[in-house]
Amino acid sequence: MKKFGSLFAVSLLSGAVTLGAYKFFLEPNNSGKLTIASPNYSKNVSLGAENIDFTTAAENTVHAVVHVKNVSVSKVPSNPLMEFIYGYQGPREQTQIGTGSGVIVTEDGYIVTNNHVIQDATEIEVTLNNNKSYKAKLVGTDSKMDIALLKVDADEKLPYVVFGDSDAIKVGEWVLAVGNPYNLNSTVTAGIVSAKARNLSNNGIQSFIQTDAAVNPGNSGGALVNTRGELVGINTMISSPTGSYAGYSFAVPSNLTRKIIEDLMQFGNVQRGVLGVEGSAETGEHYIADNRRSYMAMFKKSLGGGAVIGGTVYLKFLITSLGMVRFFENLFLALNYATSFLIIQFASFTLATKQPAMTAPALAQLLDDVDQDEGLRRFVDRTIALVRSQAASILGNVLMVVPVAIVIQVAIILLIQKPSMSDTKAISVLNSVSPFSAIWLYAAFTGLLLWLSSLIAGLMDNWFVLHRIHDVIRYNRRLGIVFGSLRAQRWALWWKENIAVVAANVSLAFLLIYGPTFLGFLGIGMEIRHVTLSAGAFAAAAVALGLKAFTMGAFWLGILGILLIGFMNVIVSFWFAFQMALRSRDLPALDRKRLYTAIWKGLKLSQDPCLCLLSN
Image 1: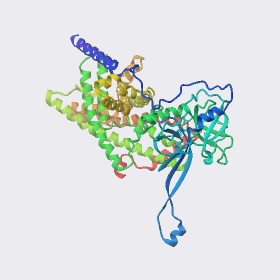
Image 2: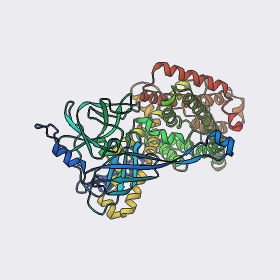
Image 3: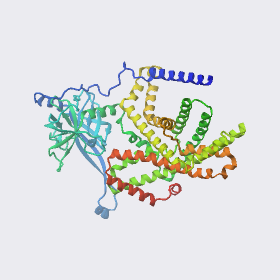
Image 4: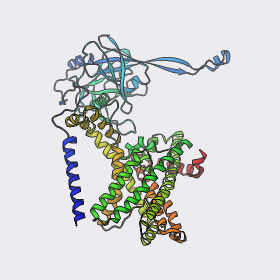
C-alpha cells in the first residue's frame, strides 16, 4: 500500500507539472498577434452588386496588374544533317522568352502570378502600367495550384489590389478579367461567374472559378475582380480547342491564393494539410531502398533498432514482475515502448514493420501515371524494392535483438544466479509464437495498430498546420522571455519537422498496450505479436530454459512463428495504408485489377527478397 501511495503521489506531481508547463508556455496567448505576411488584405465583404458599373473596378485594377516577361535557356539537339557535314557540335543553347500577367498584392512589391508563367525562368522582368520595369526575384511557387510569388524592389509605393472573399461570389455574378493578352497591356474584359469549385485534374485540391470573361494567352496570372475591384481570383487557364478563348476560362480563387501567398511569405513553401497516410509519403520514400548500398544502409539501421528493442524486452519483463496495479503497469509499459521507439527514430535506426504504413503513401504518389505502361513499370519496380527493403529491415532487427537478448539473459544469470523468468513462463513464451496458435490473428491485429499509428501521425500533422501551432510556439511571449526568440524559433521548427514522427511513435506505443486492454474490456481476447519484440522475448525464454530448449518442439515451431509474425505485420499494415491511398486517388476497379496483376507478375519474375540483398 505504501508503494502504491508513493507511485500515486509521483504521478500526481508529474501531472501537475505537465499541466502547469502547458498553461505557462504552450497555451496560445490571446494578447499576442500572429504575424501576417501582408497587412493590406481587405476584410471579407458581400459581393452582390446593385449597380453594374465596371469603370471603378477597372480603374482600381489596371494599375495593379503588371506584364511579366521571363527568359529561359533550353538545350536544343543539333541537326543530324549538319552533324553529318560539320561533325558533332553538341546541343545548342536556345533562349526563349515567355510573357504573362501578374497582380501586385502589397505596396512593397509582392506580385502573384501563375507558376507556368515563370517556370524554368533564369530572368524575370516586370513592367508596370506606367511602363516602369523592374527585375523580379522568385519568392516561392505552388505547382499544384499553379501559383507563384514574385518580389520587386521599387523606389516608390506601388498600387495594389485588395482581396475579396471568393467564397461569397455567386454563379451569375459579374466579374472582370484584367491582364495582358497577346502583349496588349492593361486589357479588361467582362463576363459572369459560370460555375464554382471546378476540379480540372485528379489531385483533388483544385477548386477553380469558371467564367465566360474573355481570357487569352498572356492573361495567365492576371486578376479576376468583382465590380468593386476586389480580387476574387487569379486567371490561370482556358478550355479551348484552338488555344485561344472559346467561352470558358478558369481562375484560382482568391481565398486559396491568399493562403498560398501568406505561406510563401512566411515559410517559403506551402503549408498544406493532407489526408492521414498521404502526409507520410515524403518520409516513406526514405524507407525504400533500390540498390545494394541503400540495402546495406537500411540493414545497418535495423541492427541498431534491434539492439534497442533487446533492452525494451527486458524492461517489459521487469515492469510486469513488479506486481503493480493494472493501471500503472500499462502506463509504464506504454512509456517503455514510447521511449524505445523515439530513441530508434532520433538515432536514425529502423524498426521493421513500422515502415510499410509510411511507404505505402510514397508508392501512391506514383499511381497518377499507372494508366501508362512506363508509369506502371515504375510503380511495380518501387513495390518490389519495398518488399526487399522490408526483408532487409526484418533480418537486421532479428539478427541483432536475438544476441542482445541472449547476452542480457546470460548477464542476469551470472549476476543473480537464476534467469529472469521461470521455466513455466519461458515455455509459455515459446508457445505464444507457435504457428498453431492464434498468432495469425494477433500479428494481423498488430499490423492494424501499426497502420493506425501512421494515420494518427497524419492527423496530428494536419492539426499542427491547420492551427498554426508552429507560430503559437514561435511567437509565444512567455517562451520568448524565458528562452529567447531564437531558441523559441528553433523549438517551433523542431516540432514542425518532427510532430508527425513523434505522434506516430508515441501513439504506436500506447496502441500496443491499450488496444488489447480496450478489447478485453469489451470481452474480446486479443494480444500483440510484433516480430522484433517477439523475437527478443523468444530468445530470452530459450536462454532461460538452457540446452533443453533445443529438444522442445515449441522452440523449432517458434522460429517459424517469428517469420510468420513478421509477414503478417508487414502485409496488414501495408494493405490498410495502401487501400487508403488508392481511395484518395479514386482509382477505377479495372485499373486496380491491372495494377495487382502487374505487381504479382513482377514479384514472380524477381528473385527472392532476401537474396536480392546481395544481388543488387
